Image 1: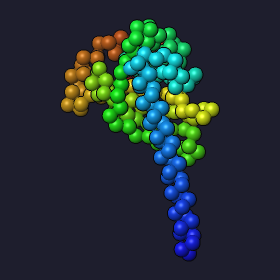
Image 2: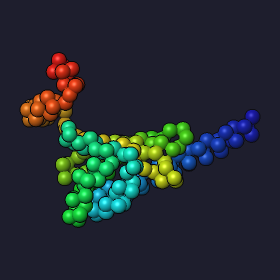
Image 3: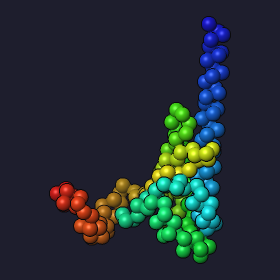
Image 4: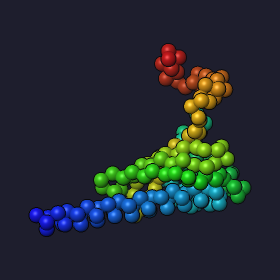
Length: 171
């Protein structure tokens, strides 16, 4: 019985170590992605975003597929300064196969604290971001004043959405 216990313990330890190694790779990849933006390294930044990757920004209109996001971002990178996000907290989760990961991160930005979240897949031995969402963090006590400040612009944006806007007006 002791033999089986130790064998199980070794297998468990190897599995946990492998998961931690993958999380370290992902953590490094995300840090490199943010660093590439801060250093305006266009090729490095978009080399980490998957070819079919999606970037969702803080504005309601920012649902960027890779190519349009590149086109939008190029002038910022060409000026030598894109954006600077520094992770102050990050949680990484993996599927059992170790080839899909999802994460959330708290970021220090020019907009103060933001939340990033996303999905990565391992492609040809490298982690690539498939989907990234950047959100402003709003203290619960300030939600009503922020919602009031957004009301007019959000209403205009919603009215331009079709065919869903008829369903949204009912809510």
